[in-house]
Image (cartoon, rainbow, N blue to C red; front, side, top):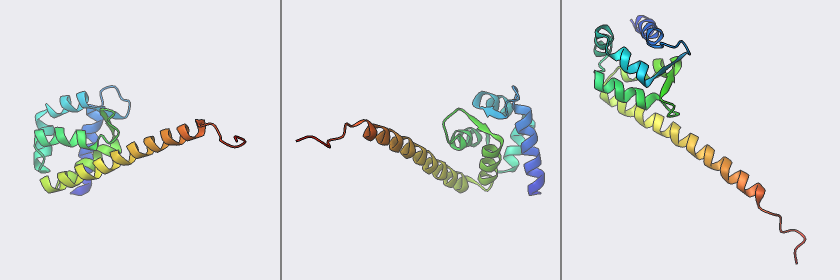
Length: 123
């Protein structure tokens, strides 16, 4: 059954990816969620329409307003077991976002340190 769900999710993703760029934008996702069969599929997985919208924003780890197939499959399959799982996924992706932010901050600090003039040779 798990493989069948993944196959169906992949099909919905491909159908929703209107521009064929391999990513599902939030607008494409909203359009996809208007399809009755998609809503029923998500409900069978224990995810209602409002939770699906929240899930999209949660799995969009880089805040690009789009998700690729791997993010989509991973996030939806993790969330299918209920609200507690969705909360855990939200925390997991929040930690991932913080890691990206810390990495960016570290890069800025490192670049700033290299620009500081050396004090060698000053009396």
